[in-house]
Image 1: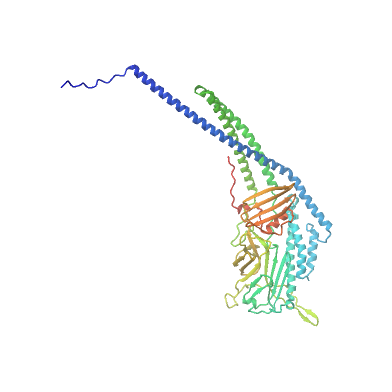
Image 2: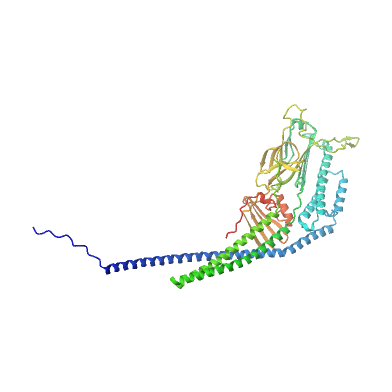
Length: 595
């Protein structure tokens, strides 16, 4: 066998030249990777800057449109302020024309704004003591017209034209007319009840009378037979019904329901101060803030520009050493765009602060929240009486007239018509505890009033001078038949109430021009859609939709002045007009200015 092969030769040694070459290749590869990384980073940075530029352009376009809108609204505000004196002059001319029309009518009716005339009218009517219900109802139309004129004088006359003495005079005349009108109804009811025996029904033996008018409906029932089994009182051809207890069925009493389509029970509200001064203050405040904001923007932009100019120069000097001229131009454009964005941000910030300060100024001058009501007391800032007032009264039957030798002899009580107290103040003389149960009453709801929810029933507290909801139970509202049934512990004025802000806040509203000086206002709420036509100084209800169905209203097609129109809509339940206290009762989403 031959000799064994030697192991592989020693590892070949790397020469110095090859080592240098290898290091050079590694350095070139590292530089290449760094260059690729730098190019990639620059490309990404360029793309990022381009995206930011496009986004800023879009935002600037939106800002420009919004700024244009704000400028237009500000110009409209200035235009409205310029038109304010002309509008005030138009209102004054309208008031003077109304006085002149009253003067040339020569119909004998007094001018309610002239104290001697209205006092003479009241004194002469007080002397007429032998009027029937029909005559009182006929005279009530004139009285209600005088009261309405005085109300409009208080609401339409600016505060600077209305002296405190005139306010006291007008409110005093309103109260005196209201009290005298109700007194006349009582006197005429007494005269009717004296003749109850001559007007008795042949079947029941009791007297029943119904008198209907556009403003008042009177229901009178006299218990002449005192039959204990006759405990259900229902007026013929109506749905009005009373379920009386045995003690009333056996007593010489009379029940009167006086349904007034107006509300003279609720106390008069104090005349609200004009917001003209507050509005002018806020407007001048906003103008000052805008001018001040423009000066601040100019000053801050100058400082910002100087600072950014220095930074841009330093950036330019550094970048020229390692980058090309194109990169420098991108950086300069970026600085300019940042300056424009800063300007817009400052404008929005100052505008937001001005608006917020103006809102605070309005809040400081706004009405304070009314005092908290007691238990069961109706807050008249939160609820509204609708459908008038139902005056429920039980009277002691006066002495009946008697025929004698062709004459009618009647005993006239000096104290006049007396109320029957139910339940009496002391019930110790009665055997059973439940001798005076609540009286079940069924009333008809006025046709031209809209209730979007089941109404609540409130009774008048004569001592506290307010409406309250206690003493009323078993309330049942039949919306189709427009009937409401409830049990009442004691008789007195009752009314139906609804949330004042049930149609607030709005879902949407639209103001659309129809012709020269004529527009259509459409207000959409949760329950209804109301369209109102406005021309010059008149308003008209165009249409009403309830639950997407057309609802006919007696106000459609009637042109009225704004104050009269607002009052008429409120009286029918279509209240879309906030008051100075509405922000305490309506939940709204605050609008924020987006930077």
